[in-house]
Image (tube, rainbow, N blue to C red; front, top):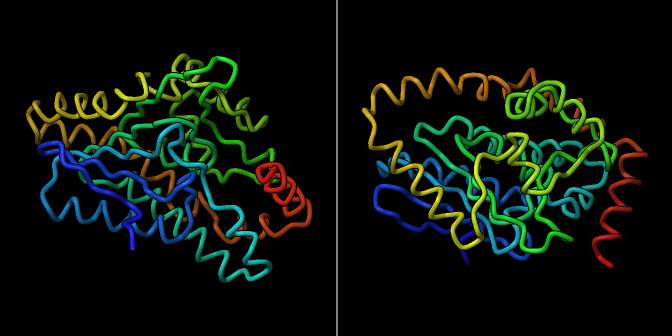
Length: 258
């Protein structure tokens, strides 16, 4: 069986590459594989992590067709969403610096994972008419982004702009994402991972105890945002199962299949 997360060595830095074609949709197996890969990197003494995706896409977010296939089975839905939030927490709680190398589109769950990282490097759009996009588009498919996820967005772009983006479920082009602070750097597609590695190398050249203590203080609110009380998974699953949300999700899947 092909690994769902490939590992690539860059000296003391390890790249974890999502490898579930065609779109790296985050099903429970991929999410659990990511959690395990991060834990293994810690055990192996890796000093920095780069999380990358496939060509033209980082991850399409949650595997909606899989979730829809679970029907009204709330226990199964709860387990699937729990796997996703476990992956987000693994990124947020990483004991070593972690940069997301956003190699293309990164909507919804992909954006959440990226927001949990220390830094976000995104690919420049190749075609201005069809730019790479990132954002939280939950409201467009009848979902309410949990408070914890909204906290992550506010941390990145500020409270007022976050409210505007979240209420509209807006996906923004990479170039605009850089302007508003949703991503930290743009690079040509082939340079996204090298730029992420270079940033980590500079970070790892600093006095490590001081850097790590500063990092822990600076990132405490990221970890706190994903605490159970700020996600309220039971309420989120109830919202997922509502008829209007199901109708919106089915319509989205139908559009994607055309």
